[in-house]
Image 1 (cartoon, one colour):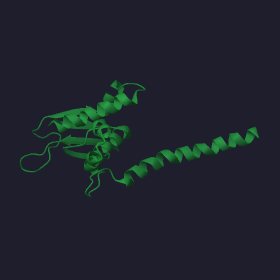
Image 2 (cartoon, rainbow, N blue to C red):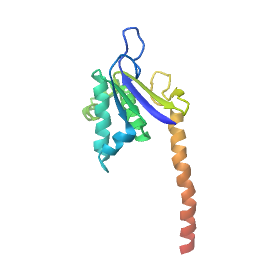
Image 3 (spheres, one colour):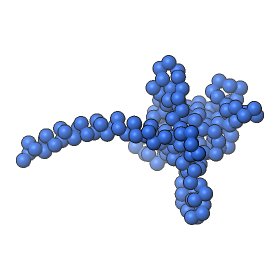
Image 4 (cartoon, one colour):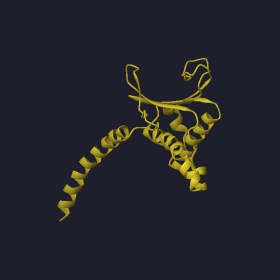
Length: 161
């Protein structure tokens, strides 16, 4: 299963632009792109993703293919930033307004299986962010391994006593 993020414009007929359509797309294969990111500099990597969102907001159609959960979480932050934008402005939180760009254009985040079947992981409610069930599933995978490793840690700790 791979993750694909599509950021782009809407055609005149109301349909969304898709890769392979007549619109120009800027494609990033994250497997290739990630080797060019700044090693051990997460702030620089965050800026790269936020810059891509800003480019999409200015009219570019962008496809990020094979992306990891790091990029997925960052784009979700931008989606959620749009949801809370009015409250941020009401509280006059300039730092938050400048921290990350809201997604001002069409966005979809898809899981694509080996057969090419696409399933959006965005919720269909008014927020349009990634559903908590998807995040819960991803964190469970990570935390299950961590908890299994803890069993070995506690075993080692008991040996020292």
